[in-house]
Picture: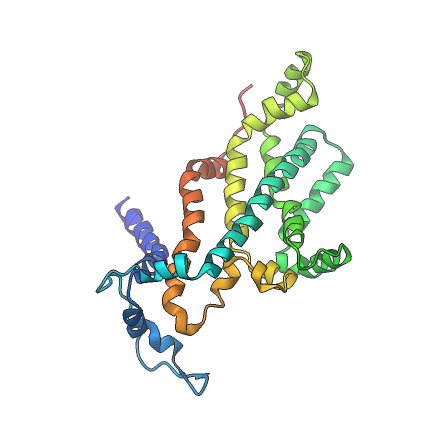
Length: 285
């Protein structure tokens, strides 16, 4: 037990170190950040130079400064605009993908048949494919629908993504058919069975899928880069990679702001996430 604790604790420290460094460095002054990390971004005649010095990783700033946060929040509205772009993209995708997936999963779980199994198998195949594989077809379809350079080019592929359908279908199939039959005997219709029996028993699965979807689409980069040519519509995830080297002090503050929302979502829904992932049993009849 002691060995396991030490090993898992070591891995936890390694995984948390970048987050801790980002938070502490965001509280440093510009001169201190340049002294510690300026060598990484050094250029000569516009060309990056070979790094001959070591980078100084500091966990405790010499002087705590909130100037970067003040500049980001009050003097640079562009950063906040990108933040709200991320929110506008992600929230509708999560909400409507869960709505579509709930209805589709109920159909797959409630009724069986060869046609439905073939369709469900196609969902699995699509889910196994990385987004980069389907990026060109998505672009062609978006171009055909004339929604390139609009938010619909991001929303529609996200809303109808197969991931949530697959996860919820496997979750709903754990509900015994006898419960559905009992509800039918009591006179319940399909909508009542769906809303009063199926959805309440899938609360943990819905919450865990919502958290995973939020984190996934919050960090999306390829979709906006390919489908949106207007940089004013890009989310903060794309904007972070384009911060100029002379503004590296702001990058830490922007990264902390960028991490706040997903961390709050994760911490608030941690129990639901664990329940939805490790749940293996069904409902006792």
